[in-house]
Every structure is written in C-alpha cells, then in structure tokens.
Length: 228
Length: 284
Image (cartoon, rainbow over all chains, first blue to last red; front, side, top):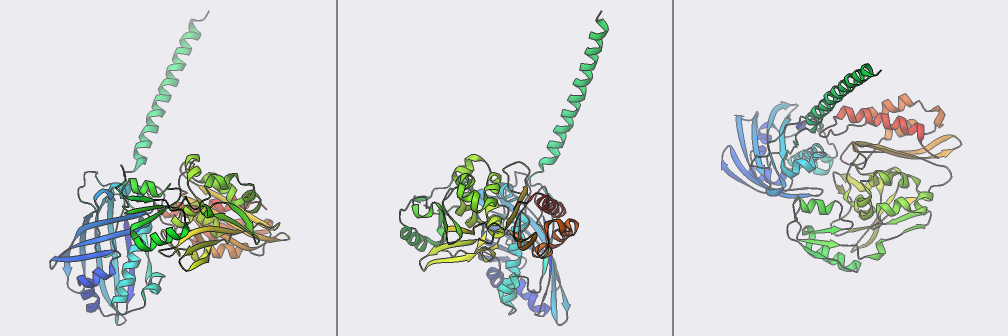
C-alpha cells in the first residue's frame, strides 16, 4: 500500500523537525503508543497498541532513520511484529519545506502487512492507515501548539491523503511483524493476489475444454464416417 | 486457530452488564451474536480478558412499533428481520437488504445491534439506518440516550457509543404511503461484504421526491451520504431525473478506499452503476 499526504503547519521548520525527532512528542502522537526507546540517534524502538475496530494487537518494532537531511527530511524504515496478529514493514519519506512562515510537510509511506492482520484487514487496511495517519498528524499539530486535534481530524488544513494501492505480497516466512511505530503507523496488507491463480485455472479449463471438444468432434467424425 | 484464554460471563441484568463494563473497561468486550467477535478472537486479533455475553438480556429482543417508529431490539437477529411481517410493512428496505448479509447460518446468529455497534463500513445495517434516517438508542449508567444515525458513525469501526454504554435498539421511522426507497449492492460472491452498496430513501409528494437520503457503503471509513446527489434528486419526479447527471454526481462526490481487488476508480464506477440501477428499480 502507498499513502501520501501533504499539510501545512504554522510552526517553523526547525520546530517541526525537532518534534519529529523527539521521542516524547512522538509517543504522544502515535495512536496507541505505549513507549518509545531511543537506541541511537537514528534508531528507536516502540511499543504500540493498535486498536482499530476488532483488532487490538500490541506491536513491538523498530524505526530507523536513513538519509537524514537535517531539518529537511529523512527516510524512515520500520518493521514490527504483533505476535499472532501479524507483521508489518515498510518505509516512509518525510520532507519539510518553508512556506509562508510555516512549514509544509509531505510524507509518503509504502508498507506491507502480513499474517492474519493482512488477510483479515486487507479490505480495510487503507482506511485504517489513513485514519491512523490523520490521528497522528492531528495530535502532532496539537503538540506543536496548533489547532485542536479534533478540527484537524475533520480535515483541518491538511489535505486528505491520497491513496494508491499496490499489492506487495509478503512472504509468509516474514518473521518480523508489524509495528509501524513510525509516524503514522502504517500498515498495509499484502495477501497474495488470488487473481493470478484463478486466471491460470481459467486458461487451463479453456484448454481442456477445447481439447475435449476437438476430441469429441474427431470421434464423432470417425463414427459418422464408419456408419453405413 | 483457537482464541486466547478469556473469562466469560452471561449476566441476566442490565445493571450487571454496566457494572462489568465500568470495572473492566477496555479489557472487556460485549458479545451479542458473536459472528464478528468470535472470528476476531479465534484469529487472536484481539485478546480481551473478559467477554460479556449480553444474550441473557431479554429486554433487548423484539420488534415493535412505537410512536410511528419501528423499534428493533439490539438482539434481534438478521434472520428475524428478514422474516418479520412488521419489518416488511414498516421498513421494507431492511427486508430487502437482509438476504445480502452473509449466509443463513450467520444470519441466524448475528444481530442487528451487533452489526450497528461494530459499524463495519461495508455492512448493510449501518447504511440502511443512515439512509432511513434512523436513530440508535444507547443505555449507560446515565440512562438512555438517542443518537441520530447521522451522528452515530464517526470513523472506521468508531461510533458515538461511549465506553460503558450498550446499544439497546435501533429505530426507523415507519414507512408512510409516500415512502420511496431503493437498495442494491455488489459483492464478489453472494454474502461477502459489499464492494460497493447503496441504500436510499425519500418522500414522494405527487411524483416528486423530497428529503432524499442516499447512503453508500463499502466506499469509506463509515457509511457515507451522497449529499450533492441527494440535492439533485430532491424536487424532481422519478421520470424527470437526469440519470446521467446523477450518476456523474455520485461518482464525483465520493472518494472510495481501494481494497485488494478493487481500485478506487472501480468502486467509483460501480457506485454510479448501482445508482443507475436503483433509480430504475426503486420502489414506492
């Protein structure tokens, strides 16, 4: 799955950057976050309780920041595991730029989710990811002293994230499950596409059908010919 | 898979249920028909410490007509709605929608209240309640309160129910002689959750439609109303509706989530197809 979003924050860029790097602020903004530990300046681990409808699963995972351009952006790699519920991994890019005395924040996330969560949640993973992203940024704005979270959730000045869906099959063997504790907890699903399989099956039946039809015609022609 | 261990209790009084909810908070889950909850537990997507079975509360059963409203208790099953003469007469849309819900075995156990409280964005009942301008009745320690369907579905699986509140009934204004309605949905296989579905109602004055309410399901985080398309229908006779314009309008005003097999554009297209079909087959 891919999720992209774009929003304007009234806080200056250095303050936004500091916020994105502050484990306390992140812990308060990530929906269901129960704790963030700083392993190194670019690595953090997080525990997150994901509560989306029927799903209540606790994920533990790591976030690593790559390609850090101080104050401008970075790439975050994340992966996490939720035990029996499933796993997720992916990466997210965050870019900051100055705009009218405030900051424009753009992000995009590629993620895949495996295990039960992927199978069951496939239908709604986009909706869940977008909801969590919205919650995160609403809370983040509040932490930066902007509009109350509620307004932001309802739209605020942030542009609705755009969604594109790519099926990214996750090998069942993936041992580390989800936790996108990185900014918006992105989860995505990746149940292997059944289409490829069923398409092949259909072609097989078509071949069998044509063969047997041909065979039938041939037998019939023999029989007709041998008839007196 | 089997569910993780949990405690199970089946109270026979409403106050006991509320006390348990107060005491255990988020660690407790209410169970009515169990058709969604048990699957979630068995797949260990959720591991509550306590499951409170509310099927012992007989006050939550039964279908009745009160004050021009059809009141359907939370524990009424989908199958009971499907077979009820009261529903067929006063809320025919529900009778038409019920067979789309999963399969017979699930309809025999799954409940009206469970479906509305669970609020799956692709489920039939939340969209029907919304399209019919219904009301959700909830009861907590502070007593009973009534929530309009328009204010009830807040987000993905998120409703206006408070943590220690129980949905006791859903009410639908009874269909008068001027009632117009339509319902249609597309699913990969019969009984699957809808790819896209549409439920609509209106009042007819002469031939013209008024107070149109169109609810789409399977296209967002909640059932959503197509407000601009409703405005297009209002005041027009069924024969005068520019169907192409209405279809274009509904496609323009929704922004559906894709799923694993259907893209946003596919769903947008299908929503238009359903509206077109519905305008051709809706019933008075």
